[in-house]
Length: 494
Image (tube, rainbow, N blue to C red; front, side):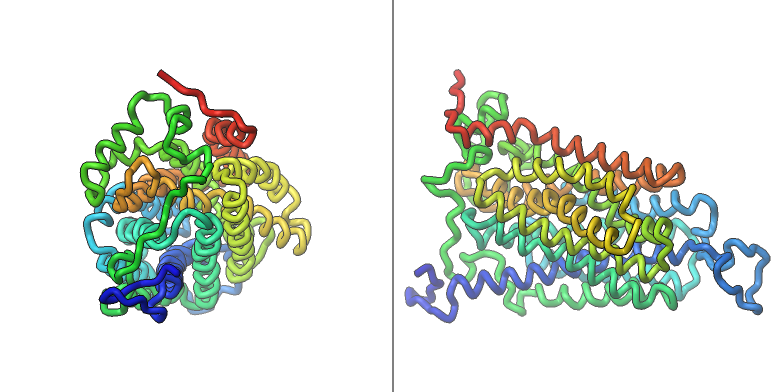
C-alpha cells in the first residue's frame, strides 16, 4: 500500500489517498473562485447597454436623450460593442502576456504563497471594477486598466493548480481525473453567472464586489498555515509514477516516434542532456518548447480557446439580443453552455484514457463541433427546448477539447519522460500551452466585438473557421496515433 511515512512508520491516517483528495478539493475550490470572478462582466454587459425604449423613464431623471437614458456611460454610445471588446481584451491580452511569465515565476516561488497573493489581488481588482458603480465612474480607461491588472494577477492560478495536481497524480487515469477536476471552470462560470445575476438589475456593482470578496477569502485557504500541500515529498510521500514500461501512447512517448513528430535532429537528446544535469533545476522557456507535442497542442488551444472564450464573454448578450431575454434570464440560460462543458471535459478525459489518443479525442470533438455551431445559430432559438439542447451539446463539444488540452495534455507533456524526472517543468509547460491559448482567448472576444455589428451570422462563421483550424493543427499527431493503433512501428531515422 502506498502510504506516507513519518519516522519510517506508515501512517494510514496520512495516506496518499487522503492527501490527494485534499489537494483535489482545494485546487478545485481555488480555480472555481478564479473563474467565478471572471464571469460577471459578461452578465453585466446587457445591463450597461440595453433597449431603453422598452422601459419607463423616471420623471425626476435629468437629461434629454430618451434612447440611452438607462445606459451606463461610456457604454451608451453606438460603439458600445467595440468598447465592450476593449474591456474584454484589456483583461485577456494582459492575461495572455502574463501567462508566459507566470509559469517561470511559479517554478521559483512557493506555490502556496503564489496562489495566495494572486487570489487576494484578483479579489481587489474585481471589487474595484464594481466600485465604479458606486463611485459613479464613467471613464473607459478606468475599467480597461482595472481589467488589465486583474488579467495579470489571474495568471497566478492555472500554472500553480495544474502543477499541484501533476505533482500528486500519475499518468494512468489522469485524463478522467483531470476531466472531472477541470469542471471547476464551468462550475465557476455557473456560480459567477448566478451571483452576478442576483444584483445585475438593481446594483450591478455588487455583481463584481461579491465575487471579489469570495476569491480573496478563498485565497486565504492556500496560505501555508492551512496545510495546503503542493508536493508529496513535503509530507514524506512517494511521488507518483508518471511513466510505465508497458505504456504505449504514440503521441507522448520519448522514442523515435517522438522524433517522427518533430523532425529537427537532436531535440529529444538535448532535452534529456539538459534535464539530467539537474532534475530539480527549473526548465528554460526554450527547453519547454522543445518537448514533443508542446507546439502543436499550444497552437490548437489558441483556436479552441478563441471559440470557448467568445462564448464566455458574448453568449449572454447574444441570447439577450436574439432570443429577447432580460439580462438575468440570459445569464441564467448561458450557464447551460457550461453545464455541457462539464460533461464534455469528463467524456474527453475518459475516452482519451481508454484509447491513449489525446489528439484524436480532441480532433473528433472539434470536427463535430463545427456543424453544431452552425445549427445553433440557425435553429437554436426556435424554442426553449431547442435552445437548452443546443447549448448543452455545443458546450460539451467546444469545452471538451479545451479542457483536455489544458489539464491532462499539459500534465502529460510537463512530466514527459524526455525530461528525465525533472519535476519542475510542469508549471512552465502549462503556462506556455495556456498562454498561447490565451492569445486566442483575447482574439475571440475582440473579433466578436468588431464583427457583431455586421450580424451574428458572421460571428459564428468566425467561430466555425477557428474550430476547423484547431482540428487541422492536430492532424499530424492524430496520424501518428492512428498509426500506433494500427500496429505500424515508427520510422527510424538516421
